[in-house]
Image (tube, rainbow over all chains, first blue to last red; front, side):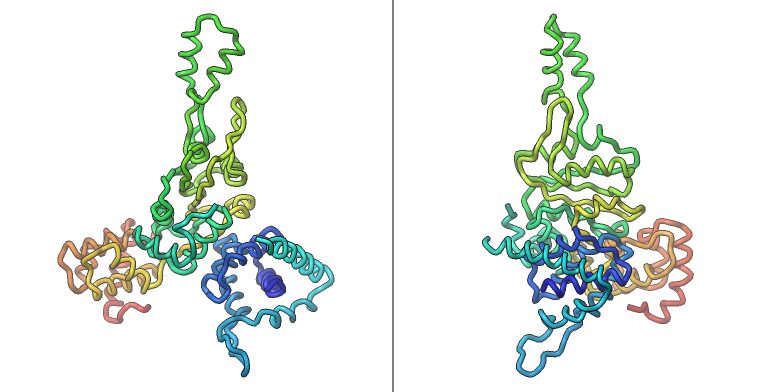
Length: 121
Length: 294
């Protein structure tokens, strides 16, 4: 999920939507309270934390529909309509320059700490 | 500490509808998150789509008092946060019979002489409240900064008294008509919720919920017509509250089927500018032949 989120954030940035660290962390935090199986809720969580301007909202919606496109399950998988957790984010980790990759892994490390810190609750 | 009646997005949705607000999954999720994360919601969108109504319905669902700060250009600290009751202080000083100044000073700068405005009132309330900061885009950036302390730490600093910390956590809703960009700091603090004009389906649901005796057919016609009117280049497109008013008017006039003459006679309910009315009158007479696109 974390790599999926950082990958999506990169997409948003490329689409011209400025997403800062603060917003990325907010999104990660908010995802803890989101039913990931509910597409509208999932989109609402990302939209409310990552987008802060009405003019960016259209671009966000497009990016969301593209990035979390409903994937047909391969034979053997059971859940339809749920974005694949580990696979899709992977293609973004290797791309981009050194600085981008560093930023992405920094965000990931921070979010991992957030997630793991709260496991005890 | 989360509110029982906001236990899940589904519960939020049902709760809001009981108070007359039809929320979609997105709105329900954001309201749910706002409670869980203790973050304010910044609701942004055109006039009359139900931004304020959301705050009111939320107060109903959460069973809390609604404290409203109506923003306007020129709103300052004395009207938003607090003000000292100067007249009373002056009287107290005049009525004093020779106390030392430090004693008198302590006395006149006490709670008794403090006029709490909405933000401070929300902070001080012993029972948790819903705080609605309406049309925040109408205040200057400097005033926004004032509100930021309240929204960041849920506290107000009063130089003479000290810092008042909130005893309870308010649910905060800010609305904006997007007439200007709000400060980054404020936006960062909030969950962002854009509410645009509803879809035809949703508008129809809203009309039927708000205007009891509206027939299915009429609700459908109103929703479609209003939608196509909004797509025209108008100075002020009709809001949801205006389409509700229009539906009520049509009902009161005993209209079953909307004809071009009906529209002409009642357009002033929907539109507030003469230019818009004239434009729509002209354009609609052609589009009546070809039903409004969805």
